[in-house]
Length: 93
Image (cartoon, rainbow, N blue to C red; front, side, top):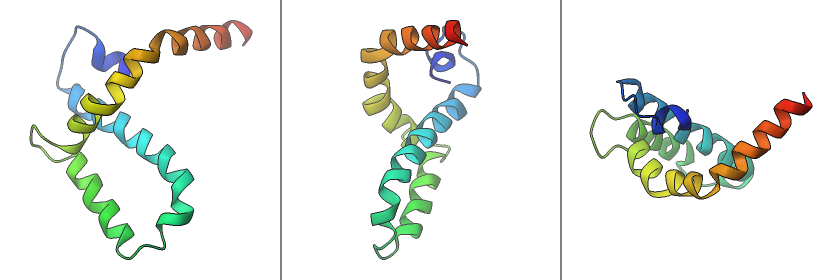
């Protein structure tokens, strides 16, 4: 999804690809922190509001904000290592 977002061919799917990248990162982070966070009052209501904010049809929605401020800089910093790891895995497979 990140490769599709960063490609030169921009189509309408960029907004939803951005959402799915943010949602994937959120799910991975939540799998580690869910043991502690579900004890907080209104955790599930806050989680629902967060996900609605991430897919809201406005330019400042959560997926755009989080992707451009956190995920994209991290990916651009480490994309060569990820690409080489993926090519190593594909040659071993």
